[in-house]
Length: 285
Image 1 (cartoon, one colour):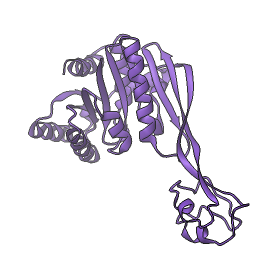
Image 2 (tube, one colour; image 1 turned 180 degrees about the horizontal axis):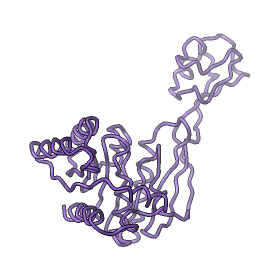
Image 3 (cartoon, one colour; image 1 turned 90 degrees about the vertical axis):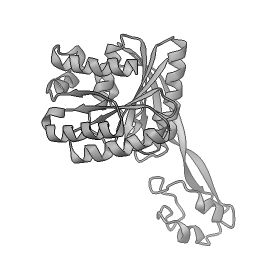
Image 4 (cartoon, one colour; image 1 turned 90 degrees about the horizontal axis):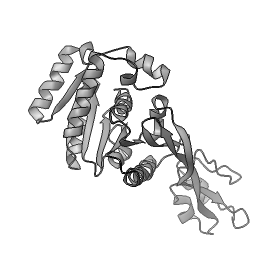
């Protein structure tokens, strides 16, 4: 299968909308992975029917055994997150799971226990299987969760003999992005014609190059600021980065989202042609 990750240096550029379109254009030949586990929303435009649900355990939380505690107060003094109260109760929200208190306790009264960090799901959509997740409130280790659902997506794509694995990557340049990028065949960076869009395009392109991933660029809503779009085009030309396409602003994206379908299934015309061109370029790259 061909593995494609759609990413953006910042949120709100429209990458999820494009992934939904790609899923439709792939014609039931793809498995989808929503790698933005901190704010998963690919399910909003793919009408998934849940088939499986699994727990994700990754974080740690401290627990004090009061029978072994000698009330020395060392843990209270050392905890930089104020997660331990005066009666030696642990605040699970404030606890960062660093484990320092458990190593420092001279009486061995503190243990680090696994904590339920979220859940991940396998669903069926009109466009193929979707693997997605929901990270718990204020939970971390989302990079591990991205790896978990990505591995499951690859297994499904192989067992179902699909042609594509399409990953809706998280925004930014951190650990979850690296988990969504590693080992893929191609990346599409979706940017927008703003100052922050250009800045974060440069950052995410550096990440792609560091990990040896071939990247192309798509400018979404390019006609809202054509001078900025021209700046992005010139940057891509200087950096020898392929420009996969430019997509105009269209309120049909919002209307399609309200209907819960990709925009290519909602309208016809120039917009669909432009999105199809981007998909064809990614398909052939």
